[in-house]
Length: 495
Picture 1 (cartoon, rainbow, N blue to C red):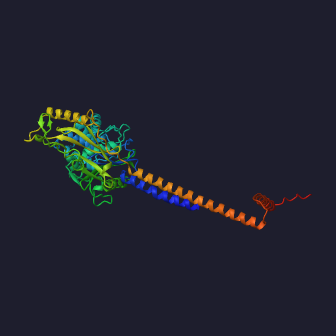
Picture 2 (picture 1 turned 90 degrees about the vertical axis):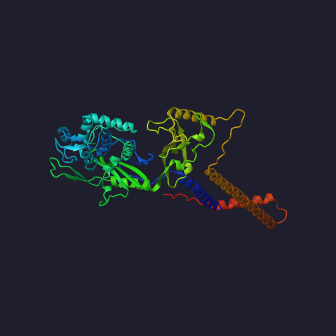
Picture 3 (picture 1 turned 90 degrees about the horizontal axis):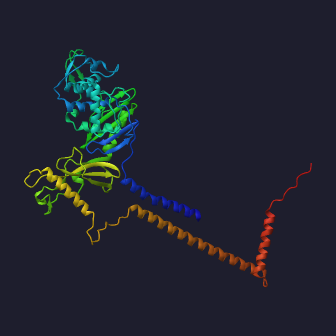
């Protein structure tokens, strides 16, 4: 009976715990991907949400993926038709055997030609020549690189040259390279160059007939086994110290991802495919205006900055705001935070920013804006400031109950797991009560059986025998049987 109850209890407990595990899984963040490289990350390019990361703030040598940042800075400071002249220092200040486009001292190419050679061919002498053209020297250009990285939010990097060749002071992290990759995706010219499948360089000293170059990123090429559907660009890298490094841009169903792999060991393409597959399978990008129903246009007679709200186009979320959601997750897990501290790149009509979170994970953001008055005229900045102040004051007042009134209480919420636990406790209580009843019933039956046996003995022994006599007789018999069953000790033999 005890064994049966124990087995039954274990079975019920096993089934009772299953709903708790399912609740946590359904509301959790997707998992199930791993990479061989030392560091890696995949992010939603539009929202910046980190979908998966491994050692994302550890620093590694980046090798030639550095050239993405180099291209960004060149495009921000030069026109494509400017002429770049290759100096002796630019051509010969490279490691022996490093990647080259075959250019020589005195060659002259346009910035456009140089960028194709930089991103497709990964030419190191071209990186040097562009750095000299923009900043006068590699050292000056490296200072621009570090400044640009900081402006993008990079926190782990330090760049020492435009090419990515080995240098102890030249390092980055997966997180920082994802930020740089997001910035690259926003630059249409860079992406046009980076996604090109071939390009013809002009005639130079060593290439009297010109030269056709192709991208080094194999996921772009349909004739390669590493080809990945949706890949729209990226950059490869390798040095003896950096190992294999890879940045990849991919797009499917309107969702753009940036994948970064650092310090890989011939696994960089497998790792990148795993990261991209995980991102596209488990996540989606949605517009904040379609997801968030809290901030709707204001259409009533209240006054805002001295104007009736009916004359304003309304407070609304900007159309560019977006957030990343797990495809199988519970949307109610998303929380939002409203802040009035706006970054420098906020829209001019923005009065606040809404940050969307999944626990502590950032999903994206959107700006709360006031666009125009009724006739389409843009609101002056002074009025926007006043509206922001009034909105902030209104928000603070809404959190304080008026004097003499009972504040409205939020409905009491009991998590589903509480009901599961209570159910388990109720089942255990019922089982314990059943066990007590069964045990009491067995003890009662045993007592009745003993009484019947005693009555039978008294009947056999005749009248005049008391209960005490029977008990003494039973004790004598037990002692007799016990002594009889004990083994006799053998005396030791005499020698």
